[in-house]
Amino acid sequence: MTSFAAWAKSAQERTEAALARYLPATGIAPERLHEAMRYVSLGGGKRIRPMLAFAAGEAVGADIERTEPAACAVELIHVYSLTHDDLPCMDDDALRRGKPTCHVHYDQAIALLVGDALQSLAFEVLAAPGSHTDPAARVEMLHLLAHAAGSRGMCGGQAVDLASTGKQLELAELEFMHIHKTGALIRAAVLLGALSAGRLDAGARAKLERYSKCIGLAFQVMDDVLDAEASTATLGKTAGTDAAQGKATYLTLMPAKDARAYAQELVDDALAAAGHFGARGARLADIARFIVERSY
Image (cartoon, rainbow, N blue to C red; front, top):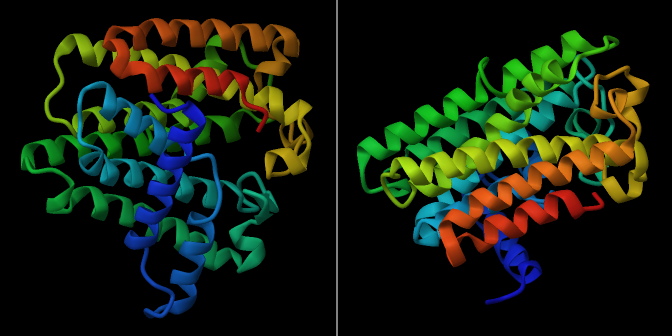
């Protein structure tokens, strides 16, 4: 088996190439909008969500070519959310993935349209006949992604985050926010990757649900720790913005040492769930370890 680093690099390159095909070319009108869509989508990012889709597909025996549309659809939703989150009316960030954010490099109107267009493109990619041979499976996958991106998923979590700025939250309240804001799309990435192979049995789905919930929370715990401890150059985005904006984070509830220990507990739980798939779940396990060990 290849190393995780080699596998991750291959998954990232596959995602980049597929996104480049799905995104409209800059020579197609409206040129500036299409240029901006490619600016925010290509050439950066960890591609954790596509990697999760590929790993979950691998765990249940899916062909990687069939998993690719699902992986890209989730990443397009993620990039749209980052583009909108960076706007002055949200988190007001000037740096993302090591370069100026969309509204800084272009303008706010283009940034809004880029997010809208990327969201539409995600569903276009997932709805295309080539994304799955079974129309009923495509409908199920579209429903899953729409739910994850909406008011009971990612958008709802962002609304709670904005409403909670400057407030002290209890752990249960903080985790409710992150299960929606971050966890919903991570869950979608895992389940969409697995569903690209066909129907899931109840046991496998339950393990994937458990896995995705645990790593979704662990990912956010580590994001909070790194925002406080890592540099802007390492993160590729402005460090320390959570504290500066009075955001509710895990570090407002516990010391960084305890937060890291909690993230490790969550990852251990995720590793147990990934173990259900035996050797085929190795990449799910690798990603879980990466989430807690990463430096950016």
